[in-house]
Length: 298
Image (cartoon, rainbow, N blue to C red; front, top):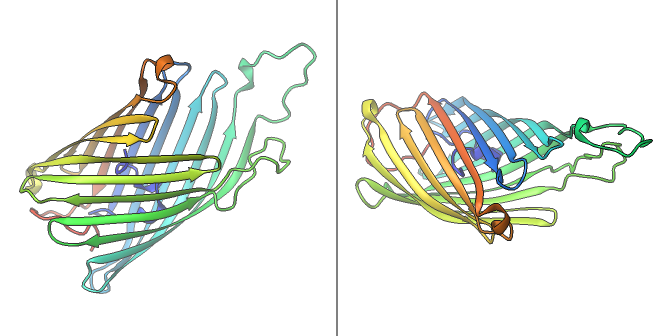
């Protein structure tokens, strides 16, 4: 769900919404047919601290929480981060740039109760590690016309490469993770628009490339009866294909996606991958009818 949790991609996207506050929750369940499923729960909250139409700038703050759990040992990682972003429009206001900074606390660990150790084996001196983490990002939004906008961003997480060793030996560090992301919406037709997307992230020895397109159907744009439907396919290169469905109703967004596994694990998993459920609520959404694509901030 590339648009439902934008803070997870880039802290500079905090504030990129049409309102004064935004709150969301996403649940993901993956590979339930192979073993104990990988489960992820994330929650985000954002508020606009300042917004100046005269100077075309603003300041926003955000918070995101995430928890991953997997396997019989309940191995997981949790992170809580605070985000602050500043954005500024230039020229005629069609170009907008944003800088986001974040700092948080993470924890990795496991439950030793399900481990069967040989007799005489010493217990684990520690089963979890707590560490600080830092991140930063840049984003750009361009309103080309009433029919077209694009946005792109670059971010880096774990800038400080924190030590995640249980023994605090310093020999196990969390690699930096950087992300590139670009999204656009082209509304050439009165009720339909296309939203292509591409994203790339890299961490240590691992990389991920996603690409695809959604179609958005504007059924009713009057504030009292606002209703938009969205559907699309997003591919994760050499790994999976995701079917995305969403309903935008008044201030609410309800989303569902399903990943069909196309990797080498497809035979073992019977091509069953993951499903996600998400919901987002926006506060202070502007109360007026629209037939064009507005800048989400200014």
